[in-house]
View 1 (cartoon, rainbow, N blue to C red):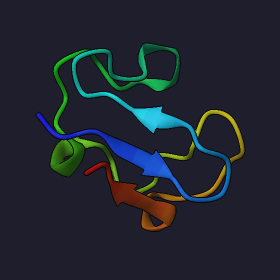
View 2: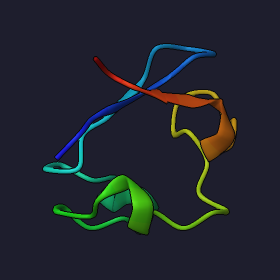
View 3: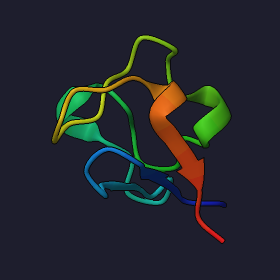
View 4: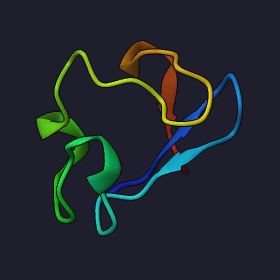
Length: 53
């Protein structure tokens, strides 16, 4: 699964890890992360993330 990086702070969303502290279980692909989810480090929305090459 592809990883995504926050362009504001550099946090990397890794689907294998998810974000369990904020309700996103491990194994959750980026497409299935809720639209209202926010970066756990800086609080920006999913629209501020880019796919890691």
